[in-house]
Length: 393
Image (cartoon, rainbow, N blue to C red; front, side):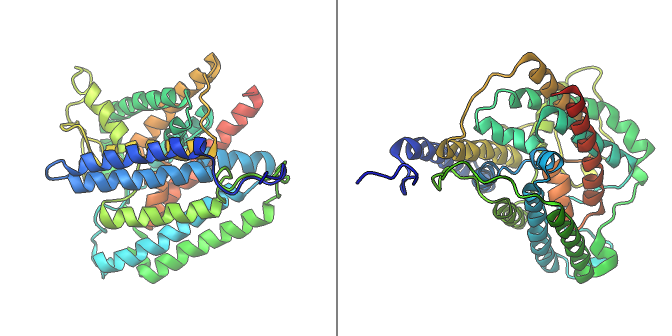
């Protein structure tokens, strides 16, 4: 029976399913091989599987912090930002339930194990502003550049290369920042003073206020030109946000908080550690929770497996949705990707994470550092957006 010209087929064609299935098989094979590593194999395999799911969700829901901010600034399309709020609400509720099991009394001076709760100071504000500016210049945050590699982006590897250089600059500036500011900066965990109920209520209240304001400012975009097959349609932003929040809670329960920069930072630190100008000791860095970096001694780490799975998951999702479109960047775009990556890398290093680690995982954990990062990230992103507009980029 012929299919109507204005009605997409109900079943994906083989040319769509086959490459996506191949990507999924490759991801499962990676997880199976990692599971065989003695000692840490099960954790590595689970990290890879969570990364596959995370990458697919990011790609299908277009969960990119700069893209959704630009949509709102350019067209008052608030759907993407509302998706981020959905992720924060889901993660907040899930984290608080887990905290009650791990640490029944939050007022005892202890912090929940491994949660991304960092120091609050001008260094955090500077790092978040730098990250937001770099995100705008390069066109994506670090997590979005990773999923865009799965879409065939040839500019994203340049941004990640720049980010690695930014991490090195962050390591070079770390000791001065730590000794001058960070060692005395307060580490504020909201449940310690508000209790779990008060902390959850305060965060959900703030998220609700932001949701109402964005919903009122939202302008519905024009309807799509024609019907799309279900497998080619992007997922609604709020669906992607809820799934991101759920994956974040599951990751914290089984492995640790979500983050995407620890492996990149560790590679940069390992590559630079033999240089005479590189500090042998980074004061106090290992004492902070966050996207921790270390000189690599083994091939695979949990975060490395997660990032590899993320790229594979995004690749499979892009193939199935028809979004795999390699494109060679021009010279100006490549330069912006490198410079933006450099700013993001420095910002992520001194802020102990990026939009996933410090913002998403931090706010879900009720860390004041996550909220401060979000405010100054918005400032840096707005400045970068203005610069792009004025330069015509």
